[in-house]
Amino acid sequence: MRIFLIIFSFINTIFYILIYSYFDKVLEILEGVNLPPVAANYIKLAALLIAGFCIGVMAMLILRLKLKKSFFSFKNFFLLGTVPLIFIILSEGTVTGFIINKLFNSSETVSELAFYLLSNQSIWFLWLGFAAGSSLRLSIYRRVLKHVAAGAKESKSPKKVERPDTENKDHNHPPEYQ
Image (cartoon, rainbow, N blue to C red; front, side, top):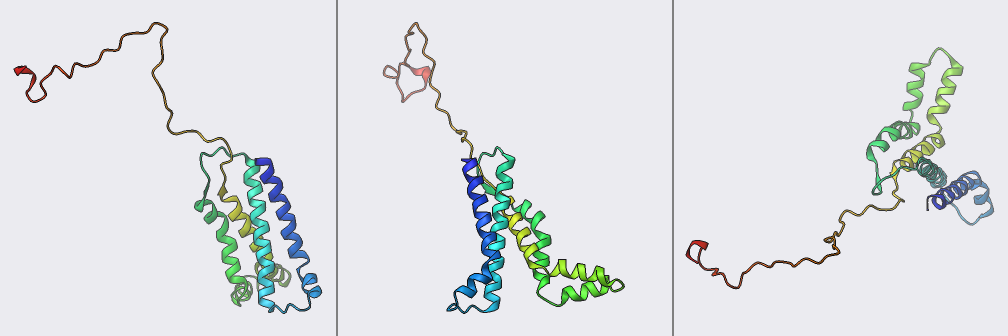
């Protein structure tokens, strides 16, 4: 099952990266579809988010974690996904340009590199998808049963089972009066 999920995730990763790569050419072929540029951009970035998720799932499957049940690790997602989430929020506005001008005002090449890295949404969406995928913990191993039915061991020589004598006792009075 683990090998199947790794192969399936790898194929999905390639598929979504191809969607991201050829999205503009597919829109040119489909001339009748008029998407606003913002919607086209977010569809491309969603493809990168899903590709990053598949890469993260592959990484978790390759690690072979032996878990008892499947869950989503919010702690792991918070640790890995905070930085890209902040930069996704900051990449659209003029805040990034303001921060870069204040920090790297003296060097033009360093400020251009920092502006490119901070405003490039594809990197941050891929990283956020990886954080979400690696936070998913899948249990694909055999489950351990919580309750085990255990019967009495049978011995080779049968013993007589003694039953309590409840029929001869008077249940209405304490034992002193019987």
